[in-house]
Length: 171
Image (cartoon, rainbow, N blue to C red; front, side):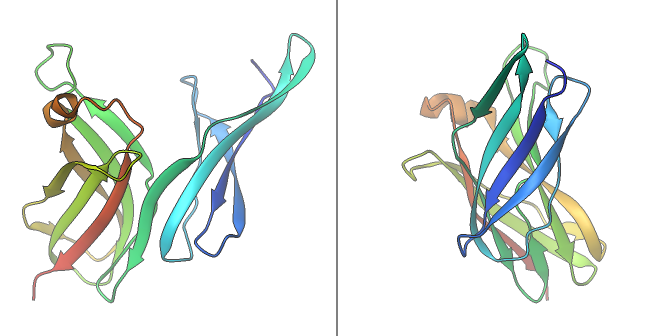
């Protein structure tokens, strides 16, 4: 389909909605970015409008819960920027679910990052705690890696919600 307009409707913790235009990425998908301005739970709905065979259409994807944006004196973690699966050993099974979380670190140093992945009922599927990561100050992305094997063993094929994302700086 050409001439399709796609937007993400981001509902912020205070109930206000931000419309984020998405651009075609050349691989059949759409991408966009937005830096959140509020701490707390955000949800996302994608809406596409355009013409299909000369007929107007509008499609809205189901609501997607996204990571809670959290802020401290040491780090600000934003809503999920993207995710991908990885098959490191080429056996056709996903070894990892990687979730990218943009962050801004106030100071360079060693950081520990932790998070939980839950199902739609809030049941924990898996959790991670990173090794200490030496990171520079400023804006950057943290990649959280969740075990594909653990997700398969839990028997839940999404959607997943990233929650309790925390970053702690070594003193």
